[in-house]
Length: 438
Ligand code: PMP
Image 1: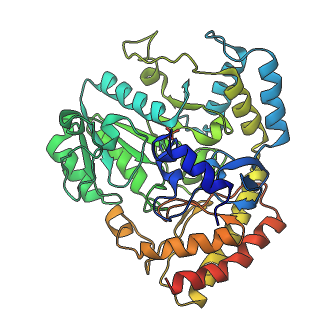
Image 2 (image 1 turned 90 degrees about the vertical axis):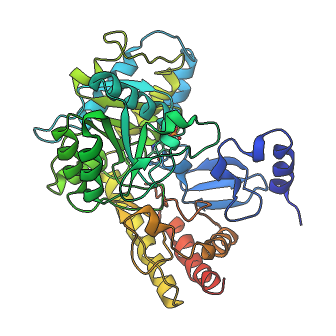
Image 3 (image 1 turned 30 degrees about the horizontal axis):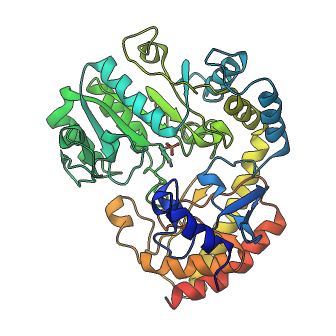
């Protein structure tokens, strides 16, 4: 029986490539028509057939407070009455930059002295890399297999393994000479980091790393990994770009970096990229870092970057309202909700004898159909991923919208109350049965 989602998907595919404006939305790995969302509030989204779901996508991270938080919506509405875009500086964007810098100040450590606002995480990482190259006068970039930093050319380089090889394009349309500027090595492998720096050290501008990997499933850095990375990069005159687009302001008031400082792992990235939560669901992202690095950006320095809609007043209003509402109590609530769901997930899969791990990094977690949490992309790819479509659809049928890929994190919000959590925990045993018999 076709419903309105099926009809819309057919219509969408007639005019939008694959029917979606970002590939993973298409349910490609789980099958079926994606649910077209007509509205969302708190922990729920409602689809085009008027079916509500408890949502564990949270717009892929931004909805830390839940969907359509009344104070965030009001801030945007109020900003809209004063104009949609000016192409001129505003007081609110200064406030947001100050707030970002203040949030990631932990004790004596001040990783962010300057902030530039952009519109997407892709722009933030792309600019961070140009900046690192401009500041160091070097071209090469080191990234980790399975880490996602947006869709700019140099960051779509294919995954290599072990020792860095000159990468081939990971997407059609990326010129090989551009991909070759990115050296891809295995995550959580300090020997590989030392080796790539031993061979190419004086040509490496920066190493970019997700603060905790969450785009190959959740794969936390091993204890000491991020700090060692900073040490090795700095010893070779290269910069560390910490990508907190996904983790920033989501797992801790000061991001995953803040969580690590609190746990006693001290290191200073040179540039941090932010996105998602920082824009409260509106198109906004940022890069921040030391003054001497960020001041290499135009108009002070020679590294060019610009944007008609950068610091858009509606986005800034949403970001400011969200960060102001994201008090420590919000993080405690998200942590507690995540722990309820992660525990119920592990219990349900164990009860059905499904080989699984529930890897986590702060309040981020996901499922991996592997006996232990993976440490690298290569390990993550060995899982019984074919169990996920049945699991996903059983959850969907029971009213829970999971990310439509096993390689994505599950996102809780501060709006996931007892009712919402009960819908999830009661759906899990059936989904585990579906995974077991897949
Ligand atoms: N970096 C990381 C770690 C991300 O998770 C993402 C998006 N999922 C990006 C960068 C790119 O952000 P955007 O989709 O806003 O361009």
